[in-house]
Length: 512
Image (tube, rainbow, N blue to C red; front, side, top):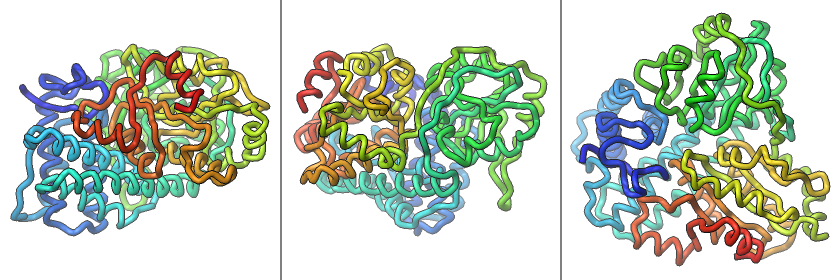
């Protein structure tokens, strides 16, 4: 085989990509990522996690998650910097996933590593807003070093659960950073149509990039549109105040080929979720942050406290036609923890009266596989006295369906980006308190989660660390889970694979 990677849900045959990544990653790029991860492990073994190395660690791990960076030159530069920061270290680390022969130990090491990658992504977003935590950096170093040692399965399982607790801490840090910078998200109607002015489309997850873009395009006659996981930007008061933040264009990340082509204007990829770039928009797409693609212009990082310079996108936008319409409607969102708790009295009254019989958490990632239509079917088949709690791009499977309301409460409550799954956990824990329950799993609450990449792994581990059980996961269980590790997750946490939509709805409504 020329490579081996099984970190995402779409890995070939649900076993592993061995010739070329389903994501588009080449064997050469995969090898460089393996080498970077190896060097990060050496750093973790030999260096103290100070702020410089801590930030470098999270950004390097972020660079290696699925659909973040395909630029071999950028990854090579990061590898060389890692060697400089490590110095003349007297240590070695394994290279590549298959360097560990014991499948259960390999599975636990990879589960831990992918949780760390998810944490790193969220920690980087927080750091870009001025929030860092030395405890998070220290855990990343400790846990990554542990993947190189001859630890027993029990020790690795303990680290996996600790990783879940650290994921909670990281998402809380990012939540505080976002709300401090942009205000508390609030219920908002977001347009899905287009205007008659040129536009710039921003995708990914980085809200600070969007804010700086909005500042630089004010009074230019250019509208800004969000795409995929940037949709929740419209929910924040400090971002929605810009009148030229026009609306949301398109759907989840995997439909870039046709949607980016139709947009007509410049496109900015701020983080992961970039797919192989097509000729139809190659001359209009830019990357920034940890995102990268060969031959695509990259907007440099901030220097000396100054904002990023988006003038190249702005000048290009002036020469472009307005976006081609894809649809014309409204999406309602903004139901993060603060907004839902403001509605708590109505929600509690609806539960006690029987108007709301069950909550179903359908958060996570979307993807291109046809069997993900399962999540649309579940949303359509759920009884009208159920409420869907969502976050992440999984919502595009059902957030435009006419599912109605319950006493003025929309049946789809969108908390925001994938990291805002933290809000859903907070809401559940608050409801447990309101209803005086001993166990959060006694709530009329079910989990039906879609996963794709490593941030979803971090969210899953966070939910397990908080005590949530009986989570359905799909469309497939991760390929990196060995039969032995899967058995542990099933027995100890009730993890199960999704099944038939009709049967799963029936079981969830019965509390199973």
